[in-house]
Amino acid sequence: MPDISSIVENYFAPKPEPKITTLTKDMLFEMIENAMSEQEDSDTDPFALDPVLSGEEVASILLGRISQTSSLPKDAKYKQGRQTITLDNFGSLNDRDKILNDLMKAGVISATEPYRAGLSRKGLTNYYFPTKSGKKKFITLILKQGAGTVAAQGLEFEEVVAHAINVFLANNAIEDKYIAKAAGKFGKGSDIEVEDPATNEKLFSFETKTSKGSRVDFGQFRLEYNEEWLQATGKGNQIIVDIFNSIKDTLNQQVRPVDGKTFPPGPSLSAEEAAQFWDAYKPGWDKSYSADVMRLEIDKNLIQDYYAQKGDEYIILGNDIYSLEPGTELIQLSDALDKVVALVRVKYHGPKYSYTVALRGVFKKGADTGFKKPLEIIFDI
Image (tube, rainbow, N blue to C red):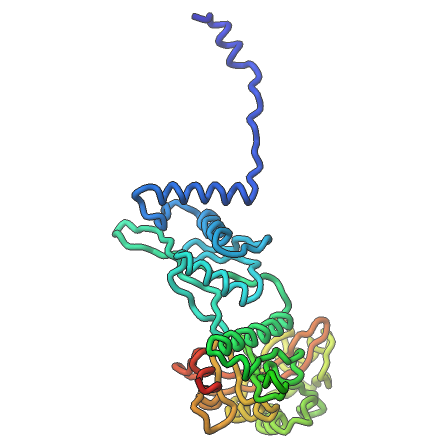
């Protein structure tokens, strides 16, 4: 038996440093795969998750599944959530829809939810947290695009829509009669044109918007001020002229400078001029210079006329398609709208501001059309 002095000496002797291993993504996925294999080999449900798992740990399992079944972006990352897991940097909607479909084929996802143009970015997984009462709280997966400018995302949506239409045409064996092309360039011309592939003749076209939410602009124009409000842009468009004429009297009556002050002329404003406007309109204004001035309801038929005048026959709003012409089986845009407002605001453009009127719509409940059925009507399937 060692003596007391030997025990003390050994206790305080320097210990070797533990070996530190860097956990790479491949190693992480291998660990996940082994853990899942162990689950599958056991009698437990492989989709049942330990209730103590964090959001990051659940996300790691889903990232591992994606790497097994589809193409995992190199900069894919966990963003947020535990019951609803959001993963970021997954690229275009086409790419995200494909990943979700691959996961569905692999039995990881049970259902997807159409987001835009009939494509999905969200799915209900078969993974779940068991509750004490014996119920299952299933995990939802959302794939985000990642960073990008609004203009770039808008252009991408045109490409997404064209791709979705061409897939529909191929699935119905009529791709030799029609081809869809993303033709719009930042607001110039039609967003989507459908042509005869043999002659390149344009047959009809679509306007596109990424959604039909309350913040989507159905066109806009600028104002200027010279003792009264005047239309500054869009003067060559009779529909825009009609919209301005329908709001100008109310605007001139209700938006006036006070206390002998004056509004800067615009339509472009410096930060100092934006501050001057708010001081003259609402003295003591201490909020953002980029803000709403007033909302005025306008004839909702004017919005449909605005797009029809551009030469488009249909409009795609997120996952819904409406007609811009009467006499079709499709719901007309004007019939789907509950109301349309002209939102007068001071808008920030960085570093300038402007007097801007944005046209925004509120849709009726039950006005959803879906994406596939309208295409069947349009292409007479």
